[in-house]
Length: 224
Ligand code: UDP
Image 1 (cartoon, rainbow, N blue to C red):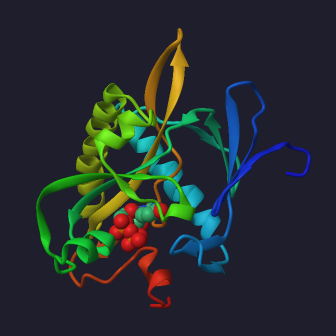
Image 2: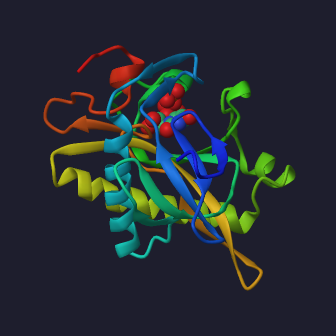
């Protein structure tokens, strides 16, 4: 790793220069953070597992035509990805009330939502990733109207697919967060899925017992 140029270090991942132009290496750390990194820990092996889970999900999504940045897994903690221009938004999709939606709107955690809801948050820890509307997104040029439409359509497609995938193994997909980037094809930007999809960015409950199988175990000190 030391031989490579570090491009960016985030809370849970590091990006290194890739072997060819237009590629990067995404390294999964064991570092775990919550509440805008005010709570921190190192969970041994977490990065290895998230690398595998994200590889599996991204590969399955490629299989149903959801373009994403994943190229191949290189080793236990690293994957080769396409370099994208990250859109500075977190796109959240919710099926069941939990977390900040339950708190913000006073809806009991666990209540199914009338339909899947998509929210956009600005990626900015200092501002606590505030919820933003399409008005803010277009006025401040974080993304175009076309990109917003694309992100919503792709996120709903991911939700449909992952809901079924997890249901098949007895897990309920409560909510999840995805991030998107632009890649340029003949000077035209295309919106593709980036980052990771793992239990760090999803709420997953046992379908029978509702036991939490995701990062809420860390956020809420549930152990195990
Ligand atoms: N999420 C995430 N990164 C963030 C914020 C949220 O991956 O910076 C995920 C979170 O794991 C959950 C979903 O997005 O699956 C909705 O999170 P919520 O808005 O309820 O916020 P939280 O309870 O995490 O503060």
